Image (cartoon, rainbow over all chains, first blue to last red; front, side, top):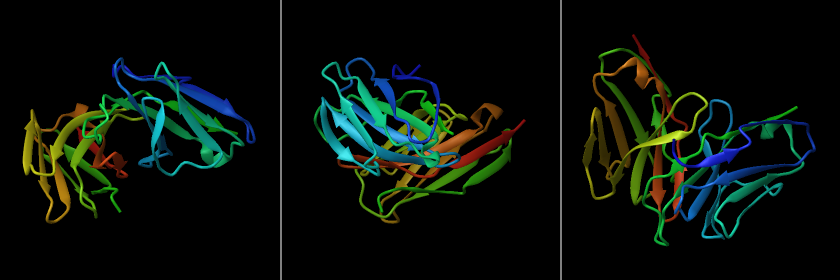
Length: 116
Length: 109
């Protein structure tokens, strides 16, 4: 158990809909990362938050947005869903005390999104 | 790009044999990390090697880093069926961590 909690584990929805994925980082971790993994693909970095503020942005579509709340949990919002958005969405956290991140990431078990 | 590329994409060996996976990248990095993913599960950190290190060991794992060639290798010795998983390298540069597409390792009993 990594200590990172993601909900829901599975989600099935239709094209055009909007969903919210939730992540609770390990206790004490300030950084949260979101990654997308399509079938048999590597992980695509979406976005990173540190202590409530956006720190780095990757290949995140404009239809997607995220935020990190004062209690450090994070949500990833996916809107106007398309078939190609079907994927595993991972959240990871790290301690990362303000310096450039050099440490390991702790991953949740992912949220599997299926868009029909 | 900074993103690592693993080689081979897939590797199948017999239990007891050694498995070697390679990772190449194109820019300077602060460190390189290896992760393991069992099918459909979250990634688990295996080992981190800093840019000023050349080799690290952890149990049956041995990682090397050659910054002049911008490459790293992960060696798993005396493999077990339970080592069957995908293995990813992740390159870190500043605040940015990027993962490669992974090597799918199958260890046959």
